[in-house]
Each structure stands twice: as structure tokens, then as C-alpha cells.
Image (tube, rainbow, N blue to C red):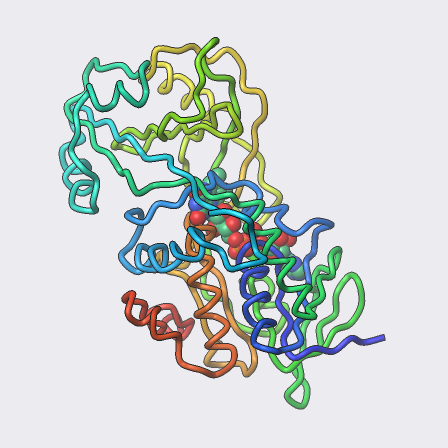
Length: 370
Ligand SMILES: Cc1cc2nc3c(=O)[nH]c(=O)nc-3n(C[C@H](O)[C@H](O)[C@H](O)COP(=O)(O)OP(=O)(O)OC[C@H]3O[C@@H](n4cnc5c(N)ncnc54)[C@H](O)[C@@H]3O)c2cc1C
């Protein structure tokens, strides 16, 4: 049996779930196909859950800022409270970091001092520190609530989520895409490729040329904070060379070596050696010992060649829409990107408030790679 829809979204991470919910809210019949048993199993479920509006290329910052109002005050019925909570990022600079510190200041970090740092993170070491910077706009995102809220809104709007349904092949016949998946056949005039690290592969399986996406692995671990210390209100700590970062998560600490190792799309796992190096650097930065990593994981951050998202209809193949290449910013930009995607899928101009926020859809078009 073949199921039909107006729009099929491929991929149930934050990108696909958010776009599917926005498109369904416009009245379209939406099917969301997810290859895993659980949507959110890949990059979305493995992030650092940060909202950092002064981090990344200017267009990404604009998308993040434009996403702020949704995350701060989600619509009625979506979530009970704000999806953001205060965090802040403390950047420490050492000899040799001068250019990096200047760039961070230019991006919006404020210059503070060790007393400011110690008031927020009492065990920070001052040895060798030449400058301390502060990003007070950085917040934590409740990613689970955001993702679950999107799927709930999608279902309420009549959309359907089908898991264990990896798209294997797609063919467009007489203006309709026919998708063959592990769970059956599906048809719609438009498909949205929101398959994260796999988006180029999904395109190829539909006879569409890839845009050159590069997944890059990032490892992470959970460890206990120093005995007897409540860490939950500590800021994220980040050396200016971004050799690692560490932030509170679930009452413990999350540590990442912040690596960007190019990989093929796969179910990523952590690089233990890099985590050990990050633990050493953490010990050199804070008065604490890392005795054990309680849990480790890896995830893929997927970048287009110019580091900007890829959002829009493919110029060479009708009805194939890209929503990929969000890099390390896919959670914090998802409210804005999904509204832009929903407008473009419907053949409309992007919303006025997005234009006002400095978002130019042409800069995200896949046409730039053709
Ligand atoms: C360690 C780490 C830290 C991060 N920190 C942050 C952060 O602080 N803030 C932030 O905003 N972002 C962060 N990111 C980036 C963020 O996680 C990603 O940008 C975002 O999750 C991408 O969402 P996505 O939906 O595009 O991809 P994914 O979540 O990977 O979803 C893609 C989905 O497509 C499915 N799929 C693939 N192929 C097929 C197929 N053939 N058929 C059907 N389904 C398919 C997959 O199973 C997957 O569920 C971080 C990432 C990592 C790894």
C-alpha cells in the first residue's frame, strides 16, 4: 500500500520535526519519515543544548537571534515555560590568544576580570590568564521539550510520524515523488531533505546532485563536579583557542574536546583520546581532578562548504527541498529556519520579521553550489 501526502519530510531530528510542524500548521498534509526507532537519535539528541546568539557566521547569528522569541516564549500549548535558562560563557585567554580575544570581543563578548570569573566559577585558576571575556547572552535550551513539542504540534495538526522508515530510493514520476523506504512506499509532490549528516546521500538516492555536505565529529562526556560543590549555575568555560569546553548538564558537567574531525555519515561515537586531552586541559583550567568519565558520546555536526545552512528548492530537480548544513547551530536556529523553510516550501516570501532580522534566503539557497 502506498500512502500519500502533500509534503514528505525526510528526517525526524530538530530540523525535520520543526519544519514538518510549521508546514502542517499551514494546512498541508505532512508525513515525516525517520530511519531510526526514535526521532532525535542522532545530532539532535547529542548536542550541548546551547543558545549562543553571538556565535558563528553573521547569518547564523541573525537566525539565532530571530529564533530567540520562540524559545523564550513558546506558543500556547507548546511548552509551559521558556525553553531557555541562563548560562553565560566565560572565555579565558592566554599568551598567544590575542587575535582570538580581539575577534571574540568584536563578536560581542564583554571584557571582565578574574574577580568576575571567580564570582561565577569559584575554582577557576588564574595562572597564565591574560584576559577574561563574558558572553551573558548565552543560555541553555531545553532540547527535549523543544523537539517533543514540535512532534506534538505536528501530530495535532494531522501530520504523521513514521519511524523505522529509512528512505532508500526516490523517483519523481508525473510530478509526484515516489519514495521507497524500509517501512513501505510513500508519495508526495514535494520532499524535504532534513536528514542531517545523511542529506547528501538522501539527495543522491533521489537522483539529485549532492551539495557537498561534510559531517564533522564532536565528542562529549559527562563527569561529576568537585565533591560538595553545586555546579548547576556555573557558566560554560571556554578557552579562547576553543581547545575544549565544559558546562553544567543535568547537575553534572559536560566536557567536549570541541574537535571537528571530518567523517562519513554514521552512528558516531566518542574519541576517547581527545576526551582524555580535554580532561587534562580542564584540570589545568579549574581546581579539580577528573577521576572518571561517567558517560561518553559522539555526534556529527554537518557543514556546507561555506558553513551556512542549505535551505530551498534544488534548482535542478523539481520538488526536492533542502534543509541541511546547520553545523553546530541546528538547535538554536531551528525556530527561524523552520519558518523560512515552511514559507519557501509553500512558494511564499519569507516572513517580514525574518527579513527585518537580516535573513536573506538567497544566501541559503542550494543554487549557490550549482
Ligand atoms: C556534541 C555536539 C554539540 C552540539 N551543540 C549544539 C548547541 O549547543 N547548540 C546548537 O544549536 N546545536 C548544537 N549542535 C548541533 C545540532 O545538534 C545539529 O545542528 C542539529 O541537531 C541538526 O539537526 P538535524 O535535524 O539536521 O539532524 P539530526 O538530528 O541528525 O536528524 C537527522 C535525522 O535524519 C534521519 N535520517 C537520515 N537518513 C535518513 C533516511 N534515509 N531516511 C529517513 N531518515 C533519515 C536520521 O536518523 C536523523 O534522525 C551540536 C552537535 C553536537 C554533535
